[in-house]
Image (cartoon, rainbow, N blue to C red; front, side, top):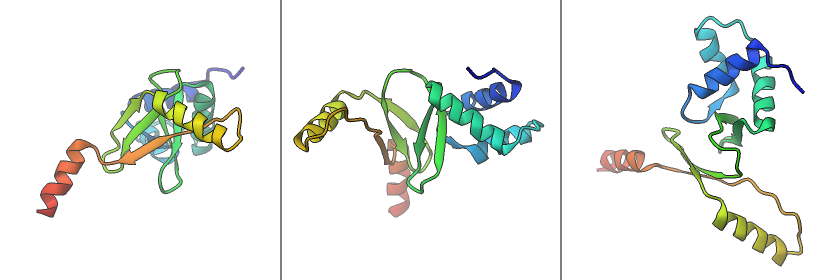
Length: 134
């Protein structure tokens, strides 16, 4: 069991202060802006620990960067994520779970596991894009 250090608590607090997903580098910069001496490697380790314990969601951006967000539920779930503003909405997994199990079974797989994050534009960003295109 990992100790609860001031560094881990600082990372958890900074993560809680963000609404959407954030990179380790951005979180590190935000912590340094408040005067924290925490190192980048420590931020990475703390985020990995939080994600492993289920206290943070972790995903890869379309560009391949690891992003983190404070998890609001310990239940398995998926996300809708706005590519423009980062708005993130947790969605219920039922339909995705059924689809994943059906596809796995149709191909002879058992014990299927998956990660599903849907990237797009939220309603507000879609409206801005439509207005800009006019």
